[in-house]
Amino acid sequence: MRSLIRAGLALLFLGGTSGTATAQVENTNIGTSSAEFMALGAGARGMALGGSFSALTRDVEALYYNPAGIAMMDGGLQGMATVMPYFADTHYYWVGLAFPWDYQWAIGLSFGSFGFGNQPVYTEADPEGASGEVYGVSESYVAFSFAHAFIDRFTGGVTAKIIIDQLGKTSATGFAFDIGTNFHTELGNRPIAFSVVIQNLAGSLEHSGAGLDFAAFPGDPNNPDDPSANVDPSPSRFQSQSFPIPTAFRVGIVYDVVATLPHRLSMLGEFVEPNAGNTTWGLAGEYEYGTQDKPISAALRASYNYQADNYLSAEEEAQFAGATSASDRGLDGLALGAGLKWRFSSFEAQLDYVYRHFGTMGTVDAFTIAFRSR
Image 1: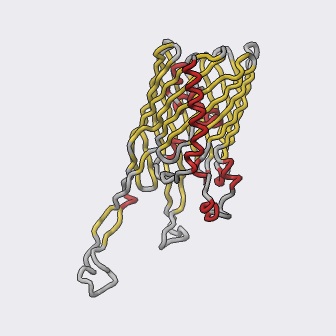
Image 2 (image 1 turned 90 degrees about the vertical axis):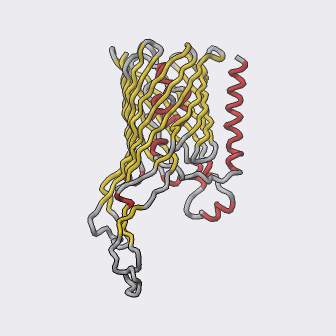
Image 3 (image 1 turned 180 degrees about the vertical axis):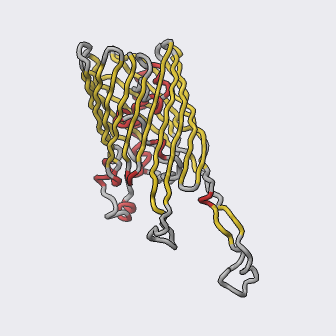
């Protein structure tokens, strides 16, 4: 038991010191990854609790946050669908199905999609888009998850993803993997759990397609003295640069401060090391009220994920004066949510909502509906 306490203290120490460390290092990797939509989340419950949810999740939503969690699901088949209207008339969708069997094994299938369509094409020659040409963006992935309970207190899981990224007339295809573990026990007769997750372990995406084609003139067609001026242009294609997928190493902890029916209060913490940013951390809490004799239960949730790129030096503050406010940057990473569950004789239905603040970009809302057989 002492080892568990030491592990928890180590996690809190790492979370507390990460803010100091990130303040001294420039965010040179910000904006250098592709397929960023893969970091938007899954269900509204997980979005409201941030990445810290990886230590708590034990339902279909674990397909995104920690595949080891589906090995601890109660009941039978579980399904979930999420809709999140995003900025600039874009949308994000996530759907998942998971099925446990034999109390030790579980599999799942999930799908995530982000994009928009029918946007006018503006060029230097046609700044008003009078040509009527349009373009769209469609980014998506399909994932298969597998999990196993090795002992009654330890589970592990793996997710394999196929990524299809279409940007206008260019496209790219790639693969990624999630690897997750969950160790759960008790501390003071109340549940405690630890998780270690590597998300989107993969290579890079490199786009190709007709959008990179152009006609190369060997000479200057406007210069009659150029001997190559009258030579027909040759078909050519730009070589695009590859960019890595947003990979993250996460260590999470959750402890039920209150675990006596009809009340449950879970406190969560997380340490994150991403490849496209600096070390960060998150804190979250979930309160749930529900009794065995009533078919309805309700939950309130809140989280804050520290965003290292929002904490600017004095020189950067002066450079961005008027373009951004410290208050908006401070709210970046804040999420608030709520949920309801209805229990029926053979299944359970769930409705969740989350309000997310993205700093100077503004706020978004997401809604989730889910079910599970009993």
